[in-house]
Length: 80
Image (cartoon, rainbow, N blue to C red):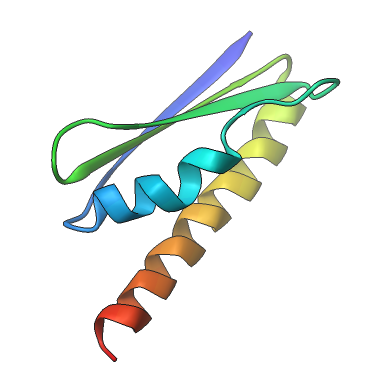
């Protein structure tokens, strides 16, 4: 099993957590699963586990993109 852990520091960490947490977990038949957690008021932790490095890379591509999109959207909403 392979693992990657990312910590994102942002004042919007609780909002990002609420946006991303429903997408995390294990999907039947998937070669990867993910966890999202808050590590304090301004830290979001993303952990991705995968059966092989190819599945890890694919899952990281998707999850890092999701984090980026969620952050960009909350920035747009905050500045309206």
